[in-house]
Image (tube, rainbow, N blue to C red):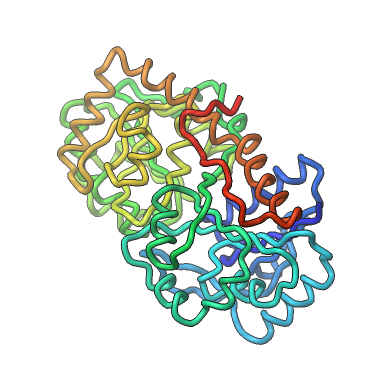
Length: 382
């Protein structure tokens, strides 16, 4: 099958949707499909050969973050040219209500279109606006996918209709079975944070405040912060005595990311909201690391309300410190961590990709609107 994937956000900057599209493309190729990805990207190079750059993107504030989008007549011309050259059996667009390439490709496509919706929020201005002026265009979508039950509810609330839930995927083997690197070790316990910490919704401020309390009990504890952001601004939030216990690693490679997670004693996700899933929690679980996460709905869903990790009250630094200390002192924590490591296999791309291919097959056999089998958290993918 010839599959065209469309990412609305620039591939020059890492992000959840971008990583999803990259990994889905790789998984589909493993299954023998011909794949082409259209996405905003600059001329810097370094992109996989299956990516067709659609030009530079413009940064736009969106959902507490900054989305890099491309739009306009030139982008539409490139989208149409890509569609003509691709000869696709199915086109799979992501976030089609975002004013970027996915919306343009959806409007121009003459072959079956599958759309994945990633957003999960009580109120989405993009979806609300799309319901008003994109109605006929959205009707071209043969099957709608939501990456979580929260995303499905957001979609149905704003646009009506139905959607099948297929979660984000992970190449679990990239994280599982790794040995801890002693360079990250600390006798007081090593905590890890991964994310763009210059975005307030990622919650680093709460973690730094909590870490002050952790160090009071465990003076040799260590916090490793990996991701994009201005370290000097974050350091100013720390007391002089704690500052030397926090290391800012900057943006790290995928290999270093996996090593860091496997070596940490606790991975902390203090996100304040705006998350539809929580792939970084899955990565930490796959690496065999204890996960402490805020109790936002998306994270509660991934950790099954605490069955596969530990929660703290969203935004509460004292509660976060207490949760981290409890995990470090819990002799039975390994049992919950092991359960989480088994659970993540249901998110492996080998399973998730097969589910998406079922959707593609339903489109290609002219039965796209049939009811898909619901995705069940209890079903074993292995």
